[in-house]
Amino acid sequence: MASTPKDLRGRVVLNHSTHIPGLIAILQKLATHPQITTVTPAVISRGRSNAPKLRLKVSVPIRGGFKLIARKGKSVQEVFVITDLSAEQLATVIETVL
Image (cartoon, rainbow, N blue to C red; front, side, top):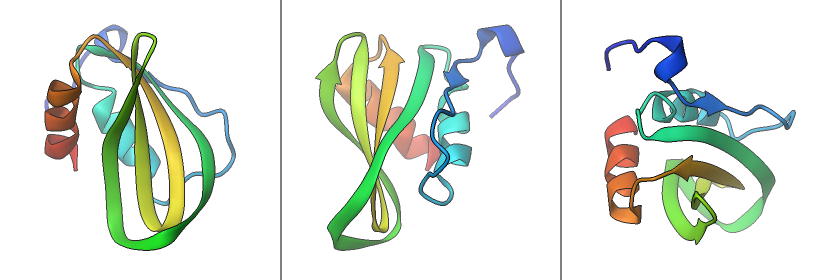
């Protein structure tokens, strides 16, 4: 992706000390999309299934955007994205970033 001016980029809120390994780099790429304003990683927990590589999936709509679920290994982390994209458009953007 071409670099975008800093004022046109979305921001990644780093409010937790722990994140799934590799997630922040992906979220920073996601935040460069012009229609994404804020990306906030949230609660991290242990899942029962094992995802060998990092996956990011659109989960449910929230006010102003969507909740995503990031999975890697047995770790699961919620990510909130503020955007005016539809769920299908957001899923397409996520696929291009991964």
